Amino acid sequence: MFTGLSLRLRVFLFFCLLALGGLAITIGGLIAGYMRAAQPELFDAYVFSGLIIGFLVLGLVTGVWLLFDENVAKPIERLASELRVRAHTGVASEIDIQAARYLGDLAPAANAIAGQLAQTAEATASNVASQTARLAAEKDRLTAILSDIPVAMIVVNPAHQIVLYDAQSAAVLAQVAHPRLNASLFDYFDRAALEAAYGKLVKSGREVRWVLTGADGAQSYETVLKPLGDAPGYMLVIEEAQAQIDPHAPRPLIYDFDLLNAETTPEIAARPLKEVCFVVFDSETTGLLPHKDAVVQIGAVRVLNGRIIEGEVFDTLVDPGRPIPPASTQVHKVTDAMVAGAPEIPEAGRSFHSFCRDAVIVAHNAPFDMAFLHRDARAMGVTWDHPILDTVLVSAVLFGASETHTLDALAARLGVTIPEALRHTALGDARATAEVLCHMLPMLEARGLLTFGDVIAETRKHGRLLEDLN
Image (cartoon, rainbow, N blue to C red; front, side, top):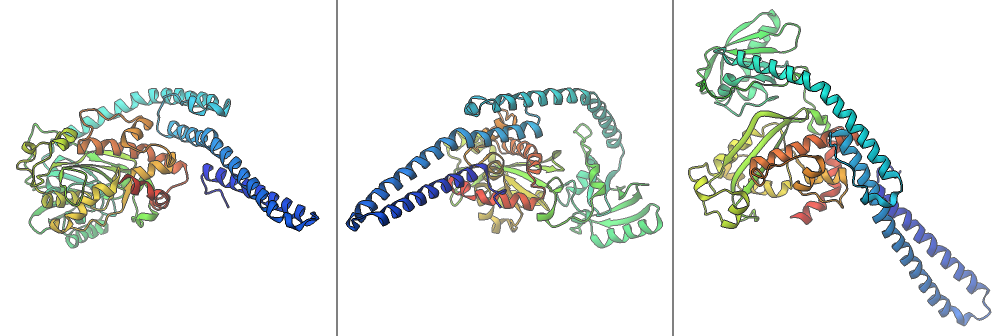
């Protein structure tokens, strides 16, 4: 019955029960004494004595509860969260024993376990490092080889979701929308033509040549659909992409082969956490009032399968259409000269909306950043109806509402380093928030919160935090 309650709440209810029991015993004793008394006129004295005793019992129980909560319950919750951090995020720092000094040998024992866990993790990481280096070298060679092929190539799973794309195909996709792993090809190419080509591929089992038009109808491409042998899905080769790519520019190969086996995407609430695509963003503004201030910078990264997708980044300055106050520039370093010629919020917002397609939007204190986007949604011509996840509330779920939940505090707790030069820049804070999120996802799963819906249900219990913060 009480297993879903936090330790501190259960302790509080226990002391409430003690207080009620003490009051019941006191009242019962007074009634019994009054019944045996020879003089009924002593009733007022009995009532007065009962009130004094009742208040003293309540005061005593409250005082003992406050001491127990501060010196036992809080340290136990903090110790549990510290152990989860070290178990699931690789943080190797020592546990603060002083904060749990009244728990006897429990804190030193937990510190010893954490130390042993860190040593084991370090040994494992050392063994993995050489293999990781070898795989990274092979990836670099593969990237170099594929980047020199004068065609655009996309690997797609049976649900027509992108599993891999190269620099050439990224340039092609960007003509319609932001290139994104796990995005549907129907976002970029005409659905009917693509389904017809895929149907012929499945039926024949051989490569199929087909002319595809862009989803916006503005481009057409000579393409080849190739089967992947025993692997599910297919490869889409665009032979006449006409993509102009600087030969000296970086040519990333973006992929996640786990997506090959992805099945029909379930409703977002029932989707396992690691299968949710997150866009983690931050904005810098001219001030702190969404109804009168304006956005000057938006930065975002994408998180899929529990990791940041390197190469899928959104970073733009925004012309606020007004002077930026010196006090704001002192915080985020964005000046009037920097935003001169930058897109205004309608254009920047539409571009960011495209980047967020089919994703959960994540921010630290999301109501603040989202308020600016909602205010200008009509000018952008879009609807911001994405699911929202707030890392302030996720922190409260994992570490308790009484802890500090600033981005700096959360980063320090999880061993995430925010370079000073990037702090209070939109992309820098978005990257830090994304790293924090990637650390917290396995901690949420360890708590039994396996789906996105599970996490949202828990965060709603701490909604008052955001009301107080804003």
